[in-house]
Image (cartoon, rainbow, N blue to C red; front, side, top):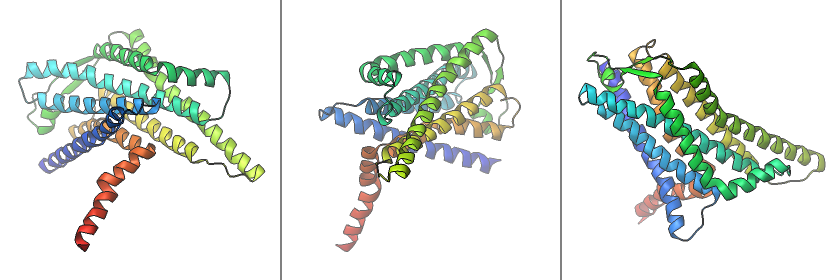
Length: 304
């Protein structure tokens, strides 16, 4: 059991450092662009906010775990705050992904429908307002969700119980819970709709290639579809893990509970990695500074 706890702790430390590193790189990259007088595109703005949100979320989860080392009353109060802040970050991240996928869909596809054109112009003109509205809505939903959760911290002296409290989940207002669930599902529907429209555009381009023997550049479509699909799978996985963590926490053993907690904790790291691979500039600069560039420099030093 001790070895298992050491492995979990080592993984959590490594994942936290990697999460901070990837998302801090995203933030620094876009902040430097701003300082150099380069205007941020809607995609760059969303990526910047994503990086800041991921750093804040991972720091909050880390702080919530450290809080359990203090007195029981203090830990319960602070963990109640964590149960508001972490779902807020997750819900806000889902909306950020939804707006990113929508922008991909409206800019890459050649569909000239009035709705697509209206959405494209709206995102370009009112994106900061949409992000602010999404943040406010996510905060309201998170505060409401905290009403459904009652915290009991076990007196068990195991290491895992010092990391994760025992949750007791109860529903105090069914109508409010249904409303919260529907609002949480809305960004997933937007992501799925954007993905389907972009995939249909990609298939239409492939059909034109076969019919007219033309060779259009499909790389933008393929990259957008891959990014949206990865973000959708990641969001659904984390959302399911979060629901299981709250609803069935008392059913599972300690090790299973910690695995679920670690899955949720990996969201900032995984999203940061997806953002970097989806952006040609971010990926190129990342490889030059931290991978390829370092390897080339080491080889040149050896030759000298």
